[in-house]
Image (cartoon, rainbow, N blue to C red; front, side):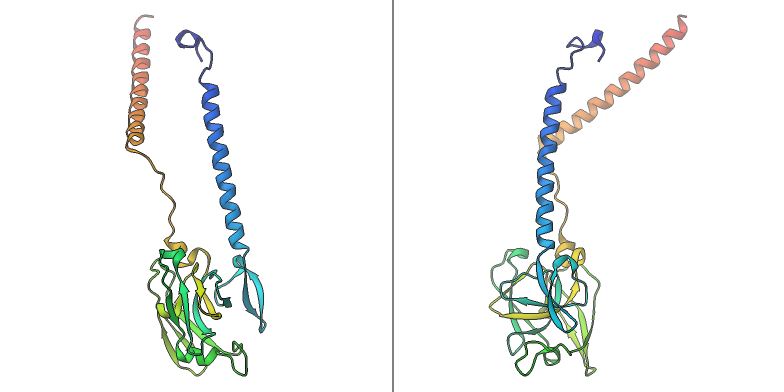
Length: 241
């Protein structure tokens, strides 16, 4: 700071207040980032039941892969988008709550196509037929949470059309149904919910936006004034040597 042109005689009076504001803001942002990180870890490390080598084993949400068969129990949340294979209901029906997605509290009705139900519904007291086979072909991940298009081919060679009535989104919870089985179709950032999530926009008032424009205008004028004065001084100095 140059003393002859300083209103504070070279003393940095604004340094401590400015440092305090920046420091407090940085600490607040740090705590918010730590909180978000903990929430992400808590969700990613939740456990679910995945079929491996003929048996269902616990697996973390973050380790789920497309094509794996998952079992969801009553009141549990879905860790990924999935196509229904079988339910505890003999007709292949189940009820889903989408309150976390669209705020609606009424339950959504989902069904398993009959050929898929015959392929994967367990017999002789079993809940699920591990020997069932199916090839599922579906569209690439998109943002439309109310639509799903695909088809499934079972071991008999029959091809079955699939739509949103056979498809359940990540974040939904199972209600009024003991359990369901499904195959994972989209995971992580490719799930429809994640594709619809956008970064929060910074909220600014009209006064803040106006002040930002005025500050940028003042800064630009000061730059131009400095350039003009420097050029004028250089011309004057060279002419008076």
